[in-house]
Image (tube, rainbow, N blue to C red):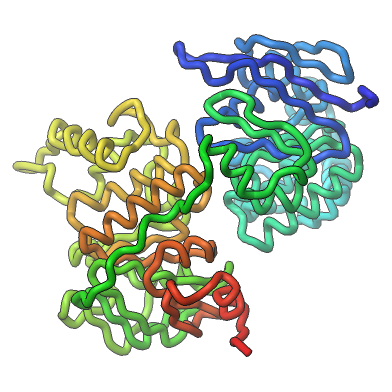
Length: 501
């Protein structure tokens, strides 16, 4: 096999504070190939690519490009070799106040002593976007661009450096299905041009669709590397987990008549929702199924009072009710874990203790003074109860995995004993191992008598976890189904506006 446009990492090891993050890992990427890199959270995927992109310099091992040993000890070293990383948090790499063109050519503009004509900068930016078959107004400020557009801007920036190897870290995590499909088209275009793409993800169905090779890491060690077609999705998951894949969902709960917690009739909002009616019982998990744009997030926010809505009739705890505001909802025992947890559900740069106590109302306060010691003890108890993997209550949430951030987003509602919990895409950006833990947690809350509303576009989760499922299509509930008697195919049919033959 030709060594041309071949990147090899041999025997890579790295430790942080005595913790071995990677141990003797090998990895190969080649031009014209899309290589999947997967594993559970903490497996070492991002760390390995951080080494390759120059973010960590204290590793041991060897990196070869086209058969020759190279030194990569900084991001500048990696870029000069044509290796570029597009990280998951795209906003970190962009300057929101600058234009699209300025952000695409940012590295060149930052070079001292350079003189540029703005007309030429804009022309180059358009040409780079055209290579991706993407059209964005290059004069627009980046702060006005969507997440998908920001990702495309970073891809265009990579191309401006004569990119040979492109690393995409969880690129579909913030994207809906349509945006993900557009990204796949761009990736295939880059692959056809000869670029080697490394695709970091835990979404197995996406990896099977876009990648031709696969590497699996677990606990910082290489587990599998070879052709993607040689393994089924189930086998990939088993290698990620380290044990045979059994049913990842909790055992079915015993069905019995339970009191009604919440009843809604004729709910409308100002944008999408039309005549929504649903009911939720104590100890029940009610699924809300729908594709992107169906209205799942709008429904969750409307029920919580986070957006304006009107209602024909509502009942909560046996009393007349209507959504008014998040504050009112919390005072009445409702809680929302939003889809965009990093923007709306948690304070990512604050401590675990602060996040877990933020929704506790005044229970930690006495004579207008906040009881930090009491809040700390509460955080320690929740960390243990929910099995949050953290160094302690003082650790910042940014340092936690997506699954552990989600546990904190749930745990903050347990202090005020909320009994109607609304989850909007709760497993978004969470790997299979963390998903299993979240399913167990949500099931346990239902067994404690909480009423759960579980909104998701992952139909397998709805079938595996819920008692009943309401299907949303174009802002309306078009079907209500018994989860034990339905299938993913049926949910997909209803969610696309179809009806059974």
